[in-house]
Amino acid sequence: RFQQAEGNRLPRYVRVNTLKTTVEDVIDYLKREGFSYQGTARSLQDLSHLSGKAFVSDLHLQELLAFSTRMDFHDHFLYKAGHIILQDKASCLPAYLLNPPAGSHVIDACAAPGNKTSHLAAIMKNKGKLFAFDLDAKRLSTMSTLLLRAGVTCQQLANEDFLKVDPLGPEYKDVGHILLDPSCSGSGMVCLRNSSAEPQERDAGRLEALASFQLRCLNHALQFPSVQRVVYSTCSIHTEENEDVVSACLQQNPGFRLVNLLPEWPERGHAPLPQCLRASTAETLTHGFFVALLERRPSENEEEN
Ligand code: SAM
Image 1 (cartoon, rainbow, N blue to C red):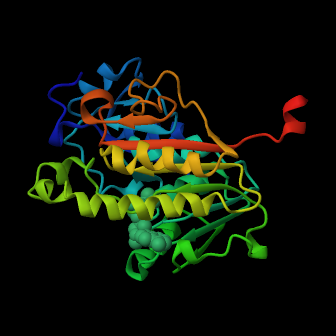
Image 2 (image 1 turned 60 degrees about the horizontal axis):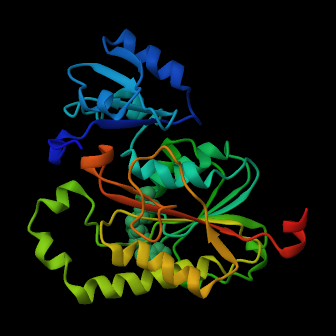
């Protein structure tokens, strides 16, 4: 366990935007600026000792670089030009695990401000269709700026309630992949956890309302006729918003099952869902996070083959 990894002791993670550049080019650029590249981390321990201008490639995600906690890239050319995205490691997991192929049709159900949307577009190589919804017009407009800077072109943004999007709409008939990252308590965010939001966030009524919204969204995602894979994520540490939502959804949708995610990942979903991932400052040097991947069960005929 990384006892001292709380608060501002997390590594600073940078995702290379492969729509605009390559990991090699970013590493070379930074080396020319005096940064010192230490190769690929072999253990999480290697991420916890970074200091000064040292940086490493992450051991789980190829396009992720990790820097010391003090590094700030907000004014850096690579960030302003959209070559790098400042995104916590845990928040890179959903798109990476959903892994939609180039040319596929994908929905990002609660998308703004769009870091996961731009990650999906990079994985899809900007080929295919990426429908992104958000209820909040202001967040959606921030998102268009972010996507423009990141060079994303395969998106279709809509200021809509995902729960009101008709799964039988002809434009969605080929949607095979859905990323669902709905509003949650945010209890996994280190900055929130240390603030006065804590006592209130445990408020049972609020959690219950969030969990019921999350379950409705997840059930809704499974209604799209061609959907094969749905990734569900939250930045909450509460079982009510994570394992409980997924368990209830699986019970109501026996045609879907969980995919066992990254066997090498150290922190698992709470019993009875070890197939899911959890993330935390203490175990994975990230913010608190939860990810589940649901897939459609093969039909009986397919299973025979
Ligand atoms: N996936 C985003 C990212 O990585 O940048 C973060 C999403 S944030 C956790 C949840 C978002 O869901 C908020 O922007 C919120 O406005 C949006 N939202 C809440 N209810 C919604 C609904 N019914 N339909 C669509 N979006 C919704």
